Length: 146
Image 1 (tube, rainbow, N blue to C red):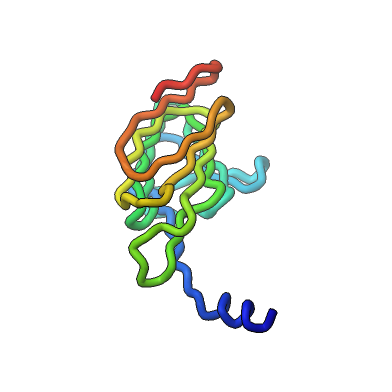
Image 2: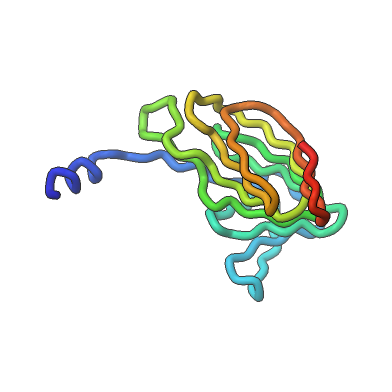
């Protein structure tokens, strides 16, 4: 057990940081639904924070060198977790996990990986991404468009 703890303490992870690179319109983030915080360009957000875009709003989010996300409102989503990799490693060790409740998303994964780079979940389906560009529309109805 001591050896395991020593090994864990020696491993250094690099976590992605999420930054709003562009914000237009009414965009909010919250961990608690009754405490929304208006988002501005340059703000960051954390895992498990819900992001809400009102009608005609738009954001561009960058997760370090992992991915870029352009989102059109109305939308609601959250990153359950960001991608991470071991320090000085080129390979992603744990994929980003994005839950998309509604909205239109253009996603460009910057870092291609032999492993899964991102997992995307909706109410209807879950799929894994290794590295690509795609458009995903998750309307209020039951159908999604990829």
